[in-house]
Amino acid sequence: MKTIAVGTNNEAKVAAVRAVLGEREYRIVSLEVPSGVSAQPLSDEETRLGAIGRAKRALEAAEADIGIGLEGGVMKIDGRWWLCNWGALADRNGVVVAAAGARLVLPPDIGAGIEEGRELGDVMEAYTGRRNIRRKEGAVGVLTNGRVDRSAMFSHIIELLAGQYEFFCQNGSFKV
Image (cartoon, rainbow, N blue to C red; front, side, top):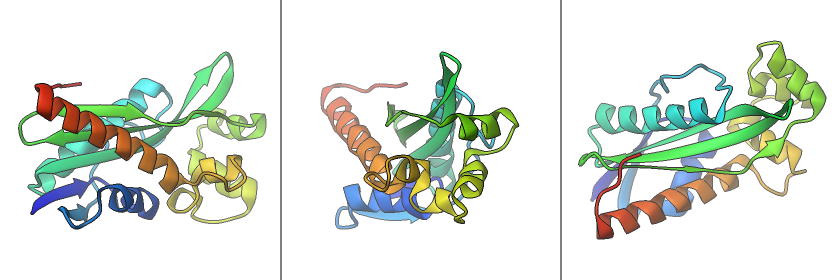
């Protein structure tokens, strides 16, 4: 049985991996590894690099067959802050695939908290009065009025990663 290492202990992210990949084919382990980027990624590129960093570090730290990194961030477009999310999958052969997820504009008062240098999770907790949003529904859950939670959003990214990985394993390696 192959081992997949998820580079976080965040329940929403690990649940997404388990929901998509299950545990019949894979043994799924989670561990905290550094992303290699700032605690609050402030661009699409930084968020993508954080996901890749987590995937590679999880792969090595757990001596797994596959490493998965999932990273949430924010980015600025036309003067407005947007939620962005990335995932990456790395294997022992050097194959790395990455995929982006949903992007949602943040309300101006949440964007102001980002401008102050605060992490989105902390801003969302202050905004909603609820704790541990980043480990539960996430900003996406709040901003979609509960229609899409963080686990569902990352599940879509995992589907994209798994599909790309299968395609590139069948048709030649691919490295991001």
